[in-house]
Length: 258
Ligand SMILES: Nc1nc2c(ncn2[C@@H]2O[C@H](COP(=O)(O)OP(=O)(O)O)[C@@H](O)[C@H]2O)c(=O)[nH]1
Ligand SMILES: [Mg+2]
Image (cartoon, rainbow, N blue to C red):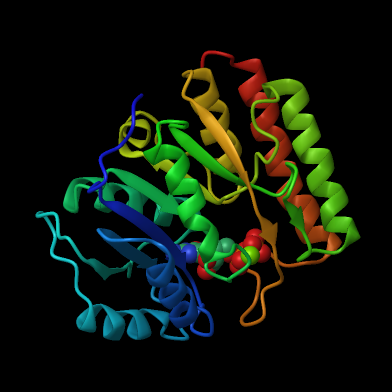
């Protein structure tokens, strides 16, 4: 695919659950980093800490009109009352970004400030210049690293990613990234599958199999300073997450046409 127009709308989807201590800073830093037209779209699952309320106030001051492409930057909120879950929240954001706002490029990331918002333009630029159909923020290419997690989590991540590379290919080194930008056309072809981080392994593997151009952009994963991890940080939590990752990798390997 070729270059994307300069006036292409970029939308960053932010899935949130109890991120009241991070969301103001995150949105402020994103708006300061990405040039307009730019939309920040928060999908909040009715967070008890009222993250949605903070975003609603910000969106009232900087609304983004649906349907027509604006030349400015703005903020929009979807507050889900019935549904829960990371993967379905990101998918909802992708659908709204493309169908309601006509976004040309969709990006997403965690909202705990572990992924630097200032790196989003690097991912977007790879797509704008036609170098990539999908750009992947990567801890495991030169220039990237993970200073957020302890040795145990980093070793498990190394094992999972090397297992994924062995079975699914080495065009991606950080299969569990979760820090992504893609052309809307790609996301219209591939819908997210799974409950949590395993969706990313599935998405990246299928994008490679469909021959989309992938580019990894190094980033440094830093520790969350406010709020708590939804997946937990003890060995049992890591192993139960790891089990889902392994079964996703094996199932993709066994079904090369999936
Ligand atoms: N909308 C929504 N967001 C979620 C849900 N669970 C986690 N998140 C968000 O997903 C991102 C990653 O979650 P985090 O707690 O940092 O998990 P970890 O990185 O696996 O430790 C953060 O932005 C969370 O707020 C959920 O059920 N719904
Ligand atoms: Mg996190």
